[in-house]
Amino acid sequence: MHGSVRNNLEDLLMGKQPASEGQGLRRHLSDCSECSAEVGSMKTQSELLKALRAPEEMEPTPGFYARVIQRIEERAKDSIWAAFLYSQFGTRLAYASLTIALVLGTYVVAQESRDGHLGTSSAIAQDFHYDAPVTGSQAQQRDAVLANFAIHQGSLQ
Image (tube, rainbow, N blue to C red; front, side, top):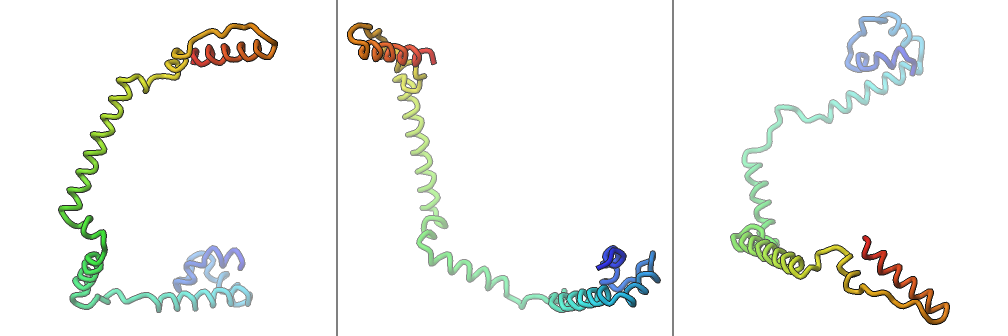
């Protein structure tokens, strides 16, 4: 499709004659079989799409919405979860579960902070604070130096 037709395609499909280039565009469409065939097929597709559109004055039959709501409610009652989701028992059970989880979570955090388990990793290093003697064979000395290094490095963090 050529540029002049492409630029005015919307006006052509709506049946309007473009104000600018009106004569030149009509002449181009009469001379160029490719552009005229493509615009013709687009007009045909546009008419088919308009035919598929529902009329605006079309309304659902009386009671349509009531029947839809009734079917939704009937199907919801068939579910096993309906006893929990749509009853006072279900809401009370949900609130009780959330309350218990909140109380237990608060208790665990309070106990852990009181015992010092929520502290930094330096508390662990302080429990094992010792200096291994650097004696023995070369392998034992290397192991002792590495153990001291690991303990001191852990206490610095």
